[in-house]
Length: 314
Image (cartoon, rainbow, N blue to C red):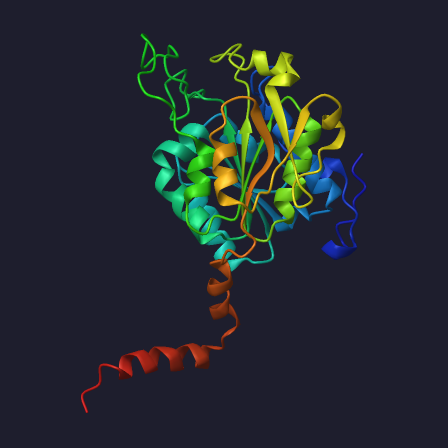
């Protein structure tokens, strides 16, 4: 039973897991979305984030139903438009905890332009790319990350093109500051990845490799069944490995080394898990957008008049 005293100030309240539960999810059984949802709810509870100060923004797709299942504010936007909506919220509400949930089609196809510039703007938010390598909601069309030769409804003879690489693409964007990867079938590491991403001061981009048990049945089974096909990246600035070191091989990795990060990002196998890239000196665009919020009406008018005076004829 939820016993949270909502009459107290947010910082004085102690929240329970039930405060973050929304509508019951209706994803397919064994869908990776279930794990992401549970980890995000646990994260909010453990960090004691006020539900009324937390917002989850999504686009369109199976994964983008996630805001409906959170007991926080949510914005279920248009296809590919989650990031500009989240940026608008961040520009005016620096007090909110913002999470963006997007899929491989939503982010890397129609939303690709917004994705690139969101990485460049580096505004404070946690972006979760739920990558199941297929358009699931619209019933098995080739997505930007679908492996070549995969038979889909749009390419029944096999996808003709190699997929894009979300990690390498993200790292290559100027001013990108945090790029990590995890998988849905290792919930402890997924949770620690979200925890580290939420602590990052800029835009934290997390690619979550996940299963689609209906339209991509078995496509990640080899990695699920054989931990030897996974590799854990370790660094003091990285992600807490938890108990994963007992089953997965580890390799030291400096996430601030751009070239090393690109090599890891392009690594198809073993699948690298952890913090791939970190740029602690990246500029945050929302720090600029906040400046106008503390100006008085008189100060804003003076700035406007000064601009108009530049065109005055003397």
